[in-house]
Length: 326
Image (cartoon, rainbow, N blue to C red; front, top):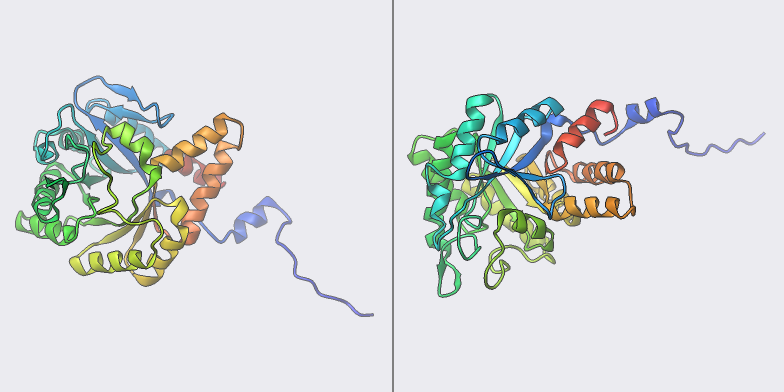
């Protein structure tokens, strides 16, 4: 009797599926972004990002407690000041909105890992990521301002600083500024591969940071390029980056995989506001199941090679990990 052996799928049971699951996610690798605003008693809904809020420094701790309870103990902070100017001076104000949020969080939760975004777009009246000269971003003038900002955030309690302005030389400038002020042990998470993306729209509404003129394509990356991503990542590694990041995530899975293969540094992927809001909108319109879409997209980011996932779904994902769904 001839017997033909055919490959079989492992589909006997849910327990077997979990045993043989190739992509495993840990809540330890999740980072939750938070928006801090000036004032007190403020919990302000972000209309472009259903379920997300802006918090004053006294209210942000309650949200942090919720994150910790879910299993997420790493936060990425963005500041939304009341007043903006041409230089973005609120970014390095030691009494600034992000600095006060950092101090409040550290005082209440000393073991939280706090990552502070280092950019000027939320603080400038024009909405660009640095100093402007003759209508364009002045790269070299911006480097000094990014260094000042990183030092101020480190003094306020940031455990990691994350330069995101996509200026040439920003990692070296931030590293030098930190070292000069005695913060040589503060790691730098580099937004090494940051595309000029339409997926940032809801964030720009949340942070009131949309450019007032032009766009950011002159310093952020062209979404058609992937070889450039390897160049940008390599430059940041050479300047002293400790962690690399690809942003956005969903449309750039191939880039995540390429950067992961080219570097031995930890790799973060930022699942940005547009990705989050797109899932929320699809679920609201009954075009898909929110929970299932959240799980599938997160698994895809890790499968592509990310070690760290920055996501507005981080608490929900941590709960999914605890339930064994991811």
